[in-house]
Length: 327
Image (cartoon, rainbow, N blue to C red; front, side, top):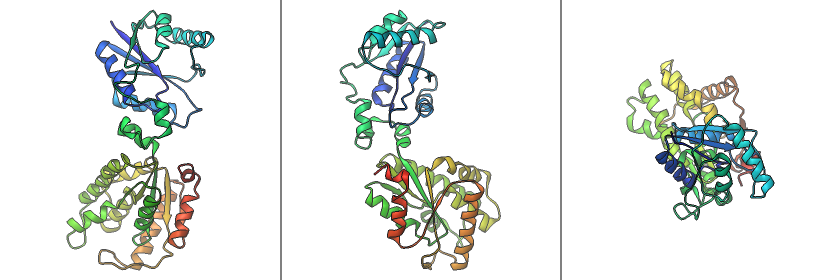
């Protein structure tokens, strides 16, 4: 029985780590990946980094080293500390192969009485390091799986009734921050498929899922921030407005928005109503706005209201702490 082990902070988990894990999987019957905590680094927390690996490699045994040593280096005192920790947590498991691309592979392999397997130590196969990626996440995003990269993007969604300025502010902020924005897919879908200005409940589910699918594509090229015009809750409100109910799948997609987005902004109705052919009037705008705000409150989702001119609204968004830290 060949039992492999590799370890690291995986901050972030990049293509080089993937190559090492895939090589280890090919050589062993089973593989353990040990992940160290690193609160000192500006990266997603330990649980998120573990999720990346478990999702991409579901057969790998991922172990979280919450109490692992935090010091690094090849000083004998530090290496003995790490060796003792590994010997303790794997005392009842016979590690036969240790995989790494670093000099510490030697002392760890000796401590575990395992074969020292070095993978691409010269960084020829994948010429990148975690430190280089952290310094320039956007420029080095091609070294990250989309599953990993999306967790480095702050996802900002703008909600509100029709004609409250969601599209304008999302597009304008994307231009200012040199990033991507996600237009409201529902409008495009409605123009192509509406019959008598209406869509079926099934088509509304298609809108919510289609919006989400396109959003995932936009995330791959987003630069620190992604600005989103509406979410699945908007589609849910339209379903209840016109049909009196929503299908379970649409309810599910709407429920997931609470965890999907990082910041919620509600665009107010204090700007003039723009009466276009695809809208239902000022009275409908006010009624829909009450639905949107009531839903945010009911779901206990923190949100900020945007009022005033476009520039005033933009400044309100930029001044948010989670936006400012991304500038």
